[in-house]
Length: 239
Image 1: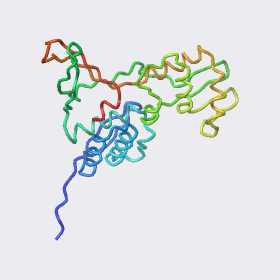
Image 2: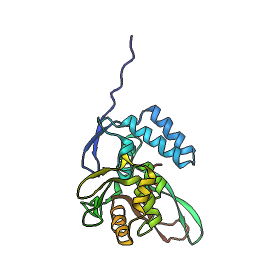
Image 3: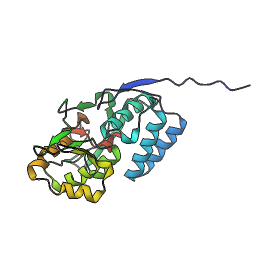
Image 4: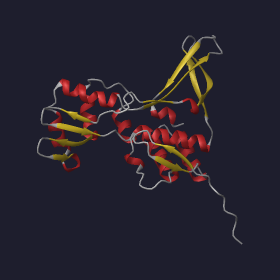
């Protein structure tokens, strides 16, 4: 006689990037094991790989390539997945700077905010009258390696690294050039021709991409000082 089969619930949410509806199931035991492994390591690359695997396991919608989704979509998906699987509350430690001591508080994932500075963040940047580029948002792996949780405004070295990963197409008046067909050296040669004003236009696209943040104020048990907390580094949400 076969053992009874448990019915796993199915939930849905929407991506930030394109409003596409995504179906997902909660964690099962095998995902819990991956999650515990992630909590025990300090290797950020390993943490990201593990969370990508969890998303791949739990996302049910067809034609959803987790590794190609923008970083903020992956963060949102994981937050929604965690809420339905483990709970909406995360225990975090914050520091009272006056006495340099940490204390524990609760972060309610229902109170996260999606900051979309420009509802229509134009990914098409016209560089000259005839030449322009089409950008794509970085994946979660790219965002990690490029340090995109930090300010990149007018940082040419950082913008150069980002563009190697995030230029999708280059076009002129005659042709569209798919960047995947060109070598890294060829892309760098093109990037090296950019002027500071072009870099400024490009950096605004990344500076204005959607962000997921958590903000709250907690009273310190040590000094009664109110401590402001802002979480926006995506690693801090993968707890």
